Length: 125
Image (cartoon, rainbow, N blue to C red; front, side, top):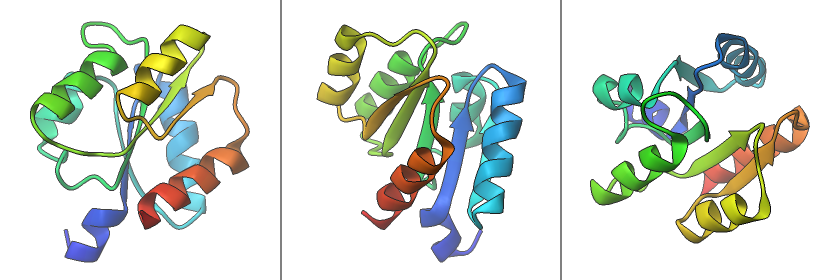
């Protein structure tokens, strides 16, 4: 993968295949390079964690949650900007992910244009 594409890679981690496909289509239609994974473990095993410009991750997933993924990346000193998505958001969860360095937390269903704007801004950081 060329260097300029590495910084622009957007990775989606969500156990819901329909969410993966919808987000991948959305990002592709906006001219972004996107790759989707069905679990945090699959993403970590891919070796793309240090090549990812922006990570969109669900909070609630089987085996390893988005919160656990965030902690694991932080422990590995991998500073991937994370945008969380969730169907089960509350103020406490929002506070936790933001305090731990997340860019944003969107509750499902979310506005696709707002998400795209946040992804664009994150890639430009």
